Image 1 (cartoon, rainbow, N blue to C red):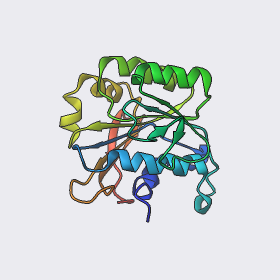
Image 2: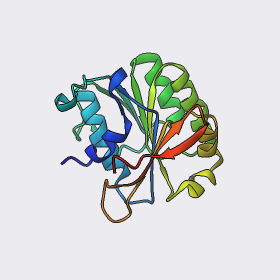
Image 3: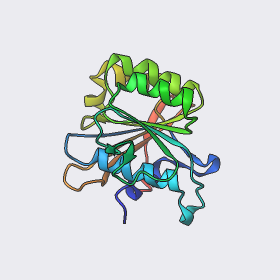
Image 4: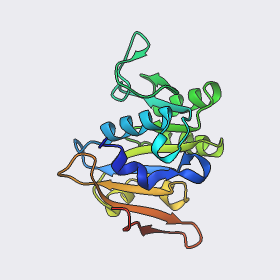
Length: 191
């Protein structure tokens, strides 16, 4: 089983052939970047088993860890419909992707700076869905960061996935935003 499959079942929106705005959270070194790389590959190439059609994905690969571009070509398999901007800030990269690449989903690893928030909101308001990662262990950890806290408080993030510390890519807890109640509910039936 691919590492992303364990997470995909929580974030896929099959009704709209897209994903829910998702934040994947774990401590450093637990596999967030590996997981999003595999998720990107599957979204961008399509998933026959669930009749998910390939969609355009845009990655802001600030440090070159996701796609690992070499002379403009990705060294890692990121799917057939993925565009990458590398070695730019998340804020500039998200704007570049939206203005020139028409992604359906935008991806940024390790969000948490003030300049990230406006660009994430811009992406979501432009009709894109978002897949983001952040460092932390639980809700208390991520809400200590005012940027992440604001994304949660403004109901921008629809799913929050906490990865297990011991098994790479394993979901420890998953939460879904109930917009009617304005709160997150634990998704227990899929773990």
